[in-house]
Amino acid sequence: MKSEIKGLILTSVIYGIGDILLKAFNFFLLPIYTRLLNPSDYGILAVTGFLSFIMSIFMSLSLHSFLTPLYFSTGNHQERRENIGSLFLLSILVGGVIALSIDQVARPFFSLVIRDVPFDPYIRLTIWTSYLSTWSRIPLLLLRVRERSFAYVLITLSSSLLQTVLSIWFVVYLKRGIEGLLIANLIATSVTSVICLISVSSNMILSLKVKIWKHALIFSLPLIPHELSGWILELSDRAILQWYVSLDQVGIYSLAYSYGSLITLIGYAMNMAWVPFLHKTDSIEGERASERFSYMATYFTVTLCFFGLFLGLAAKPVISLITTALFHDAGGIAPLIVAALLLSNIYYFPVNFIFLRRKTTKVAFATVVSSFTNIILNLWLIPVHGVIAAAWTTFISYGVMTLLTWYFSLKVYPIFYQYRRLMVVFLISAFLWVIGVVYPWNSFWFEIMGKLVLLAAFPALLIIFGFFTEKEKSYLRLALRSYPIFQR
Image 1 (tube, rainbow, N blue to C red):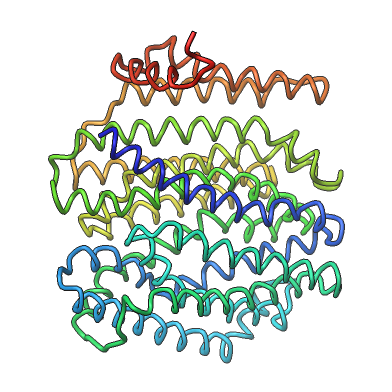
Image 2: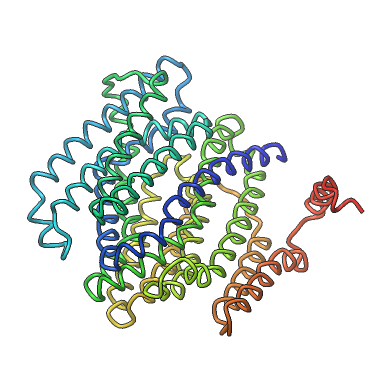
């Protein structure tokens, strides 16, 4: 198991570095954007963001999700290439028809539902960027399935770098504002799709296989309500907020959410390494590997909780440092967003067992219930409490989703999780988070020092409360002794 964990860590680190650099390109542009754009511009960006998300769901029909089981269930290389090409062909044909229909027919609908955001140019640019992004989904997923993490990271980083350069050109030099950002995104997405197709061209052959299309639709269609519900969980708060608060407040909340999303850098990187490993291991060993998976669940959780605690404690000072005073209120909202998205990243571990057994209707049920919880709570609480209510409902809804997913995963793939160790991690994380967020720090530097102490207390409390096993302690001592500073 040590070698397997090392392999997962290495792959996760590669994906993690790539994701960190991806986020960094945009995150470190915040000081520029917050001086050239106003909160209302950020409100428009938030609205086009959730439009892009929901349109991408319908344009892709989640067909790319079928690639992983299709890849591991096909033994013949030639047949596999044809099957992947058939799936890709179905994806781009379906997406093209839907994108064209939205562009030509749905304009009056957008005018009625989306206030203060003109169809031309903002929504039209969003439509075609969303469609072009579907071209790269299967090629990028194919790179992940084939465990070509360096190629995946190189392509995605190049795309983000191109988008960053184009965004600076359009916003800083051409003064095109939000329209410039959307044009930059369209160009970068187009170039990325071409690069992705070239990189995997030898691994797929375009073909029309009705049988593959049928199996792909059976697997993927239940994921449409799942992804729609995921959109509701992730973005409907901003859609509802625009009806009850000003665009300035929507923009501040959006900034807090962007910061909170940094936790997904860790969770998503680990998940990208975990998915192909899980499918490959199960195809060889079946449920005999369940004991190793229980250990991996514990390590998955403790890693996420540590980084979630770090981001939650750092939220207020970081946001106050990199933004103007207009955006400082986001620092009070961001820690709760971090906690909510921590739960959504823990969800990655159990949900993959449900995908492994192709029980996609159970995934859809969990997210649909959670999304209805989110909508009801948002409509009830936002009119009274504003943006802080949206943060709390996000936390509660992701908690419901994670618990339901864990329950269903046990039904389809029984694992004896290490519940005592997991409870120790959760309680310590919550205790330190509450102290760091609630305590009234009197000065900036006192807050920095105090929160560093709280962060350092995390591993110390794990040791005190018996989280580590004797084997893990022995392994850690051996690992530390390999460094000169610990050899005395």
